[in-house]
Structures are given as structure tokens and as C-alpha cells.
Amino acid sequence: MELGLVLGIFGAAVAAFLAGCGSAIGVGLAGQASAGVMSEDPEKFGNLLLLVALPGTQGVYGFLAAFLVILKLGLLAGKIPVVGFSTGLQIFCACLPIAVTGLISGIHQGKVCAAGVMMTAKQPRDFMKPIIMAALVETYAVLGLLITILLLNGIKVG
Image (tube, rainbow, N blue to C red; front, side, top):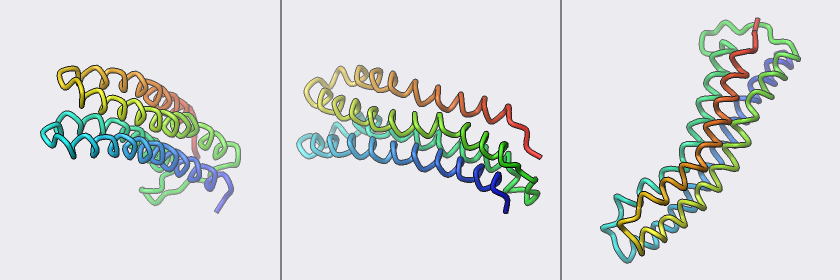
């Protein structure tokens, strides 16, 4: 196996792993806050579920980026092209925007959502306000994914 292919696969793994870690931490933070609120008022489950789920999107973005790399490298088709070192390095670097933004924004979105859970506990009618705040954090994960997709599309393999 050539080093270029290894670098490309490593880029896919890093994108999925770091963005997934950001989501896991973010969902965990919001979930802990939500569990505390629901222990006193289980009727708030529906409103809180969205706040808990929002930080999970970064993991999906990292998975999508990894899947695009897998397709680009032909790993599902069984026709794996020769991937030079520089091409593999390009693929690895193209995966970094979603990997890093997914990690950081997932954690911070979880913190915003956890604060939103507390706000919803006291102000149930204002439950959309923290969702809007959390969506602002989401913007940067979306931008990271977009850059990763654009970079991957510009790389020729084989």
C-alpha cells in the first residue's frame, strides 16, 4: 500500500473521528443538562430533544467528508487507483477544515445548547431563542464542510 493512499484514508478517518468527538461531547453536555431539567418536568422532553440533538450534526458532517474521500479513492468500487504522496497529502489536508471545525463547534454548540436547556426550563415559551443561538455556532461547521467538499472536488486521483 502506498503512502499516498494511507494519507488519504487517514484524512477520512481524522474527519470522521474529530467531528464525531465534537458531537459526542456536545450532545453529552446538552444531554446532561436536559436530564436534570426533565427530572423535574418530564413534559419538556419534546422541546429539549432538539437542543440535545443539534450538536450531533458535526459528526454527520465528518462522516459525509469521510464518505466522499472513500468514494474518491475508489475503496467501495474495488478499483483503487495509484495515489501519490502529494495527492494523499492534499486529501488529508482537505479533510482538516471539517475535522477541526467539527470538533470545536460541536463542543461549543453543546455548551450553547446546555445553556439553552436551562433557559427553556425557566422560560418554556422562548425555546426557539436558544436554537437560533446554537444555529449560529453550526454555521462554522457547515463552512468547514463546504471547504472540505470544495477542496476534495479539486483533487484529481489516478
